[in-house]
Length: 380
Image 1 (cartoon, helix red, strand yellow):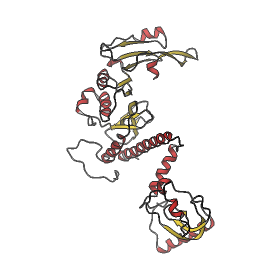
Image 2 (image 1 turned 45 degrees about the vertical axis):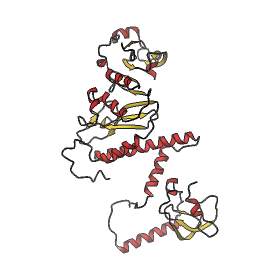
Image 3 (image 1 turned 120 degrees about the vertical axis):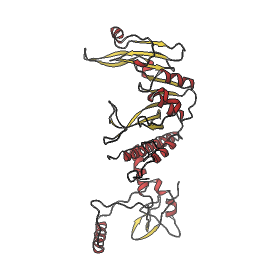
Image 4 (image 1 turned 30 degrees about the vertical axis):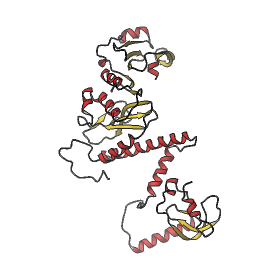
């Protein structure tokens, strides 16, 4: 699928603003939902940076990239994305039963409802999502939840005013419990007041945290309740985001598997490089020339070939081993006889050979008494 070349007109009855990239979104969405949810989950907003003209473009103050396409995501504690939904204003995809909760709370229920969450799973979110109606619904589903909540969503719950708490000093807090007994509201005064709602923990034990005081120009130890501590084409931007999301999810799965086997794992950059090498080595990929493309005459092509041969004789480049994904894919590995001899790359063989693997671009023995070519391409 090529989102940049997709110029077909959408169905007039289709309200999906993302119809151009919907196929790849659905593929990634289906894959993310196969990941097993952890005990602790987080729901938040992500931004795909974009400053061009788009009616669903959003601005979120405080984000590293405040302008862009907003995506609601539900993640494991290690960052693996389990489910996501792209914001489309009134056309945002949400189940009818959750629309009465509002955009933020409804999206938490919408994302969580797609997964088979076990009882007592713990959900965390910020004050954009939190409402008392959401907390009550999640409690009915058997899920724990904790989140900051805005003061205008307390539905009459009486907490101390900011002025009274400032008189008590920084680090002061108060709490109230709902009549149902399953939700606790905790208000804590730091630089400004923070209100949290939870059915998992009340104010709990009081910890000490380090805070800077502008008046005394020194650090202070402040009380803190336990509950607190816990391209210009938008289509291509979304496609790149889906690819990046898939790579990050795959790397986190890979790290978890290697850790379970007590084996060392690649860092994210090396993991990306292996994927890139595997994709560029796939059948049908043709390398691009640098600079402006132009047609060459046969004499010019011969001239370029002669120059390349002379350069290769003067400067012999060090051969690199292919990544395991390319080496063991059992596809289009053909032997080719060459003029010069090179040392075989199949350890522990140290003999020289005139046979090369065209795909891996490494010398490998292919003789009656030794078949390093076969051994090299077999997964060990």
